[in-house]
Amino acid sequence: MIGTLKTYVNAVDAINYRLGRIVMYGIFVMMGILMWSSVSKTFFVPSLWTLEMAQFAMVAYYVLGGPYSIQLGANVRMDLLYGDWTPRRKAWTDAFTVLFLIFYLVVLLWGGIDSTIYSFKYGGERSPTAWRPYLWPIKVIMCIGIFLMLLQSVSELFKDILRLKGEDI
Image: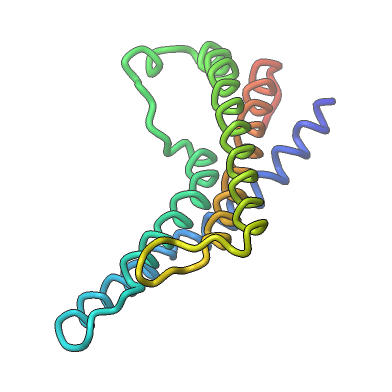
């Protein structure tokens, strides 16, 4: 069983690490879109697509980068008490609290899949803005990101279990 947990942790961590390293360059995509927005408003005709495209890029950056952030431990913690605890007590606390995150992500994924199916079912849901882009691409990206975050959260749970058993991770 311990071997299975370690295999899962290594596989999920490898996928999310590689994807996170790629996605972190999405900030430059967003900067390019917003720079074009500024240039086009100043020198040319303002573009209709730039603001919404920057929002979509930000969603992809945030949602696909979340699992990488969790893996690196870059998420925000309240260290008022946690910082002074022993590694074993931290593992117990993290193993308990990650269950709430897993529940939340399952509910979020369920709603995301339902919303994505709605987008496909009714002839391609579109944004009500002047640009009117299809919404299914960003909804699919969100579902993938939430699913990867769920996998990473389970990986973190398994890491805590392995720490409690005294195993090397």
